[in-house]
Amino acid sequence: MDKKFIESVKKDLIGRRETILTSLAEQSDDMKRLIKTVAAGDVIDVASDAVDRTLLDSLSSQDAARLQLIDNALDRIRQGKYGVCVKCGKDIPQQRLKALPYALMCVNCASEEERKRR
Image 1 (cartoon, rainbow, N blue to C red):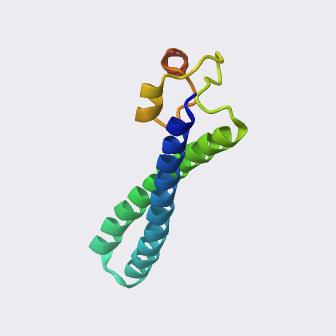
Image 2 (image 1 turned 180 degrees about the vertical axis):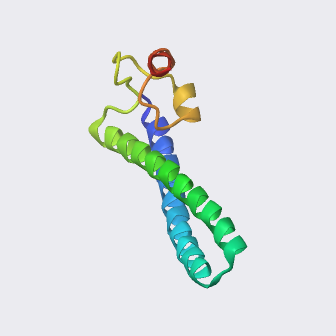
Image 3 (image 1 turned 90 degrees about the horizontal axis):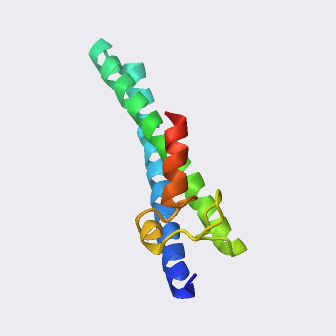
């Protein structure tokens, strides 16, 4: 795989990683504020805050999963295995990696895995 492309992807992945970490840190502050509001608020505030907390937890979970995928992609770059499908061993097309830089599988294998999960 082209070294220039891999360096570009690496920069993109590091940028995405930093964005997620910043977002998680901000959500943590938001969570602290919500907890204080619940302790001092009325019933309507408590219900509203419960929804907000659930949403924040969900976002944190999604961000944490994406962060793991990004870290795995960075590890594959360091190991020289980036861009190779973990299932079939074929090269993942650059167009797919541009769209989803932490892709583990080629389109065919990813589609097959998705069908199995349904």
